[in-house]
Length: 482
Image (cartoon, rainbow, N blue to C red; front, side, top):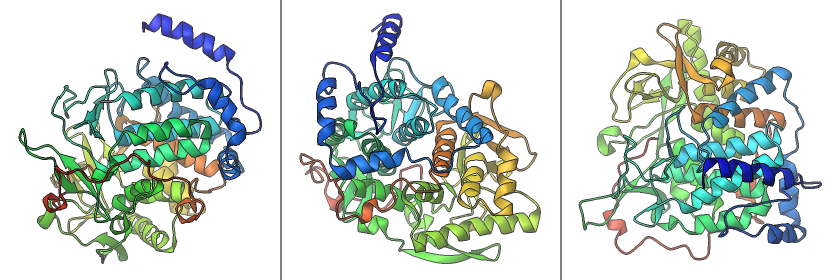
């Protein structure tokens, strides 16, 4: 459809859509002809289960409204997505003006869209328009081996692409960790906006998620030479592994080994004992990064249990003690940077080294350590009474792009210059953090995985691992970004 005609149709639709009563639910869900019928969606609402209605209401329970300054910060973060929304597909760019995204990046947009809706940054008709367009495209994305979401897509064309953003017919494979992030984002949307549940369930049923679960662990897949079966590779280390596993668990998958903290060990960093993954890089080519982001995501989406709370507080305390010892504000996480090598893991610990700054291939770049905007925001809103956490926020809260088009990723430690790159990862997490604050620091999915009444079950037509990939062929290497 031509852009001009599409914009005219959009104006007509937005003008005719009402706002739902009591729940704030959409009174006008729409999409292309093969999507759900708007009238049927409307008729189904009275038949929603009471617990589904209660959950949807809880999504809008703003008990600690944002201050004017916080609202301005949220609007800046949301503007990133408005600036990077592809008008023909409804997908958003992972980095400013760069038309590519992973499933993790697209999950960031979904949680940002949900946060923006309940924070009042987007009205219901516009929310419906964006979500309908996004779900339409998500359901039409080409799949790796016609079975699993590919690692990277072009956000304008929806093609599978390589890491140079060039189309690829063979594909790069799939990442279980990225899919786990998307599964959590989709679960949040179907719970907070239950009129979309059937549609979302249908999209996920198209994915053969059983390929990613082997013996209670998460596995990605990478292509081999022509005619050879897909190679399964175990993904995840302490932090990200558990977070991604919760995404699969929300959809009914049994992943006890991925959810377990073990194998782990305690190491001392800045006089603080922290928990790290015990699996060595030399044995698997998988980095056992300890960063802030996985713990922040766990807190604001699922809530920490007593074990995670201790691990997270130790990780935060080590960063605080580094500041006490060096005078260098420290809030580290994975981040894009505005120069080569373009993406780094700024860690508390990795592969035997405290404060390692490395690429996925374990190449060191200590001179490019950054203070992470998203980590600083996260630690502040998780520990709002902590003086050091307040200092972190003050150091980054003004790192806004020109015309408030998003938050930059952070500052370089060596010279205090701004890391002038805008990403959906930074801005999406900021929106989720501010939404968490507005809900009175209540994790959105708290208790969901413990509930015996859980309705997030595996799609009935999903399949077990396929015949051409046996568990004997699974190898313990990590081909994912995290």
